[in-house]
Image 1 (cartoon, helix red, strand yellow):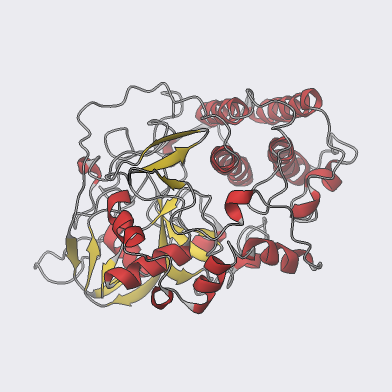
Image 2 (cartoon, one colour):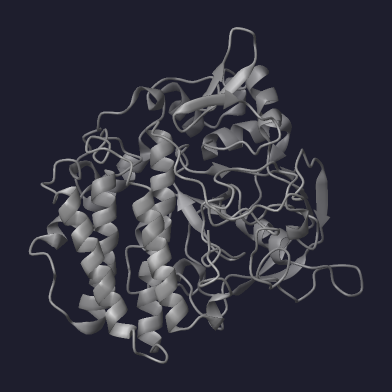
Length: 472
């Protein structure tokens, strides 16, 4: 949730709001691990998650590195912190082998870092440009890791995190939302402009693209729609799968993320021990289960619930999304199509695209509980028909919030890309990952916007990812 202390668009937020956001995000992060026992704080070694104890220490180390050490040239608080928590240098599959500080010591370190960061700006009337950048960089980094810890708990079958306490509007709607909308072609500007207060380097900079007219689904693909693909034998039909997708499916999930890490760290791959669900060849999404009576259920954290056919399908890989599209005679939208559908408006003459761009699908107003499922408010997914007031100008629903959406494109730099100080954020992953757009229910409303680009390897099915489709 976003409290009244932090609500509002980023450009209008001053020092007091930043500090309130830092404390709120830290409380959220700690709330995700408080109930975990010492065994769960380490967990099994698998390529798609981190040990929670390492992850929270890494968040604090990152905050210390950029806001205290890099920005202010202060000495490290931990003698061996870089060797423990620098994700650039600490290979993923070694993080379970590190002699990490105890939980109590890690929490004490986290608190010390936070309080020092707050103290450095507590009496300031406004932030310098560098302070604004590095404080928000590390605050958003913490928000991303909170989202990651939520899907870690799902992956490992831990109990559900405590739900947000916000009052959810009763009239959000629900149900299915079928059909397509038509988007006119033309020239359009995608990417971030320099008046944005904070952007990540992969959004830089805005550039004009040509888009042909296309039709895109009003809403993400639902469980019910994906169930038709499953029951039609889609996971057993080779013709629906690309070569890479079929190999991934047959192998129970090729560890492409681990190969990506191995390339990054210039080391030989030693495949880690995987939990069983991520090694078996499945005929359905990873957390689905068919009952003897033919009905389906879905694991949500540590319990199974009946499959709600009006919720968006989630925890599906890019390969699964691609195969569904081939079966359905559809396709995934390209990045530029997705952004045009989210940001664009019809030209005043009724044909073509306006030069006007929306910051969010519904306009430029900051997200709220009525407009989008963000900020942990709902504690999970809502049905695809909900949040009609958040529709784009063309009538696309839930393009921001609820579930991340795979696009067709491989993650690449925009024209004129230059790397930011956190040089490992984007550049190492160009060419190996696929782009996702829109955020999910656990994404911060301060972070997400129409231009924001997420990226995962195409095998990832643990994240809060679904997709919408386009007509061919």
